[in-house]
Image (tube, rainbow, N blue to C red; front, side, top):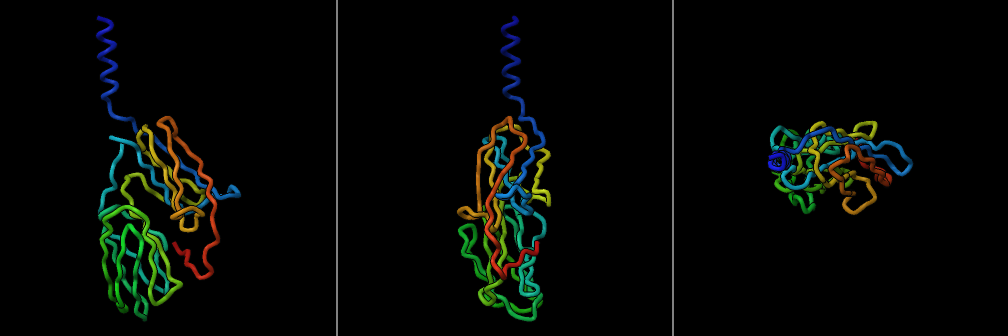
Length: 207
């Protein structure tokens, strides 16, 4: 009988849902200084994964010959509007694999909308004003956020499961501006050191 009880307990434990617990990521540069506005994405394996829910209103404005904000995070399936508040026309485009699109000349107080239906990083440009640049990170994970001034992101409800962790920053010295590493189920905190290149001289870092 005792053997049967132990077997039943083992089966119940195996079938129980994964326990959620806080998970913290700290991102620093090559000198150990905190990196602000790095995009951290945690993708738990298997049944623990949860897709980000599309919804909400997202906009990337053209104002003062800049894209504002410079960095935007949206769930897969989201619509993003591109209102123009400048007295000049803009021609917004992206050649990124996650979303190729072109919004041909539109004037002040006009707006266009794009649906972002695939995960990935979308680099934006203006075909008229070369200094204009911005990024949209389209995520398929419910655990995606940007680091604060201390270089920290904390997910309060991350499942206790093996996962893949990715870091994106526009100026990270790595292919596509991204680094990845695996995370064991037992890990509840990770430190990430990244190497950054200087931003272009005319780039906007207005987040």
